[in-house]
Image (cartoon, rainbow, N blue to C red):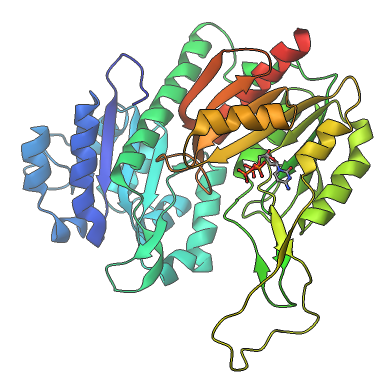
Length: 423
Ligand code: CTP
């Protein structure tokens, strides 16, 4: 697990949901990772888990109510909030998220949120309808704008027996992200101590002479006017590279397929749907690019003919679709490269990662390939984090990138591109 050598102090806030029992496991894992943890609970959380459980495990008083006569600290919300490196909320209910987003401080945990200068990481868990409610989503957007980190809930069977998004992310992943946030924040602090601004790396304009063309997201290949073949790509990794490159002075164009997030502001984005459309858009933009990055999950095959009308079930038990290959955009870019162009590919694999990535690099004549094992926790589609290995043409070196945010990984990939250019 990734963390600095020093111990971290975590304020663990437990809100009132059925997933409250999972906060116990989070606490244990944090302790195993050398963190000191103090716990605060909402009153409703105590209906699910007794404060005594956390008290026994932390050997500290568990804060629920500032006004409780047995509370040893009369201004606990100030003292608690200002002695922690992270305020971690597991699970976060729609109610506590709404309070945080609106500055309501009517109990210990919500007062602590307001009084804290520590980074905040929220792991929501709730019923799908509550999660998808525009009010909840609005509150989350607001908190993200305020700089709060989230570990998004996952899809699965919920306590209410429905299936959908709202299940608490795996505890291991929550703890990995908590450690990551604390490591990142302490890195920024140490930069500050060296009289550098937290964003000093962003101000390095080492890509100011480069024009990046990046494919992002998944493609959709029509079966008929209603159905399509696609994949789970969210576009998060490609957009992170676009944002990082732009901040380092590059001019950036993204050719985006279908994504679950929006492109970064001020980046030129061309929207496409199918592999063919993406290919055409890339080829049109290619003459202006100095670096091409294929971060899209392009469908390798499409239906040979898309039916003009909706295919009816009729009486068939089986339906065969004849598929044909789509253009390999990366390969075509590489074949048509001008002298100055650097070509970067991604290899998302489930097994033999390094071998497949190496053979892709050779087959497609790439300068650099970012390989990731999408079966690893914290890597792959739709997460905000990734784990990868960078391979470089004519080099035996393997650059391992451990679990980190996709945004941090974007900078690491760009660092290698800058080094390649200097060669
Ligand atoms: N890629 C592309 N156009 C395609 C297929 C893939 O540009 N039609 C790019 C991806 O953007 C990625 C790289 O090729 O940068 C690797 O994609 P991947 O699908 O993992 O590899 P393939 O070469 O398609 O091999 P396979 O599916 O057999 O693993």
